[in-house]
Image 1 (tube, rainbow, N blue to C red):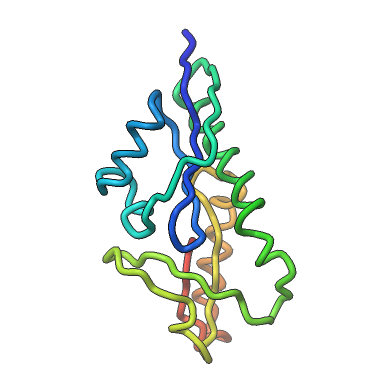
Image 2: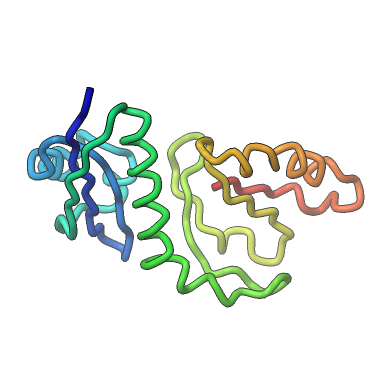
Length: 152
């Protein structure tokens, strides 16, 4: 069995980007514009489709792998350039993430406090394998002031 899907890259307001998959990128774009799709595109207005790529895969899992690969590729191209030269102990570039109540929380809210930043993905085996180490670090009594943990 083969499945043909289209991966798409959206440019969003606020210098953000979104990668998704569909059989009809134009229709999906209109859904993003109307607020019927991903939470990310509700917070950052879709501006335009930058790229579409048609791929053929043999399972939905492989389609997700391709989407994840494309996401990483464009994270590196558009986002990581600003972060790449950050040294350990240096100030991190400011960004915002959603909390559990879907409210945007900017990193600058924690200025002057210790913050443990953990960048991971549920589909990433090395990331998940590292989760116990992050929990151990969080529970470490020697860093009691660093109870502000942002997992991304």
